[in-house]
Length: 304
Image 1 (cartoon, rainbow, N blue to C red):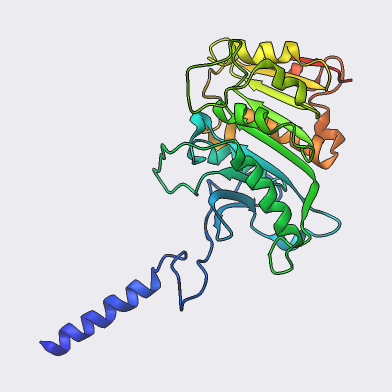
Image 2 (image 1 turned 180 degrees about the vertical axis):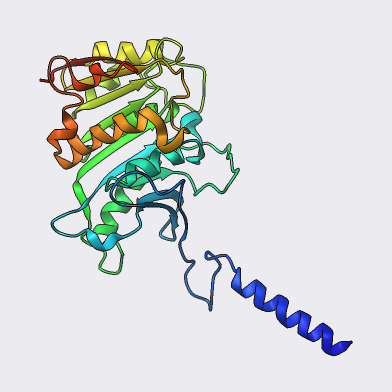
């Protein structure tokens, strides 16, 4: 009987060793990165993974699984992402962010990596977008980092949805920012919006934007529609593109591969951060290429 118990104990120990979480600390060493594939890794040429980096545990990283194809001739532009509801987790946007990343981008989202079914309620701050940018730049120059000399630190986007869009606008003045993407969001017309966790911006903040800007809204059903459209009308000093799809405030982020919003955002990132003129055709011309898509209504200013 004792021998049987010992054998069972040994088998149980072996099974526990096999299924040990990859984030467990081993032999007193550093905590290892945890990663998983969202959906099928995206439709782009670089299958993406979602992971926690031990050097940035308060954020979630989305990036191509194979970093070996990136280097001096092909680098990863940076996209810092803020979440809806000021959530300290990108759980609502993982399909969207994974899809974008699969086209060769390093996406760093506010909040720890969500687990299956995880819907964190903790709140975030705009400064976490700056933290994401600072981390990526530091990784690029760290010879011990897997990202060493693989990140395009001269092409950086700040982006976010709803409250994350306001966080984006709060840090858009950062001189390192190359482009701005505001999703289902806009600055409240009346200062003091009554929602304490949101950045309390005024329309004056729009004057601090210094780079091409994309707004994606959910049409008139979107609670941010009036604010976002007013932002668009007030921005007259940089190129700005307004895209509206009649889906309401929730966008298409949770749809397979992020739906239509991911297609438009990815094209914008490819154009603005990678110089892809073919992708840029979605936004250029009269009418712009996206205007030919019946799902979208578009406007633009200061753009060809």
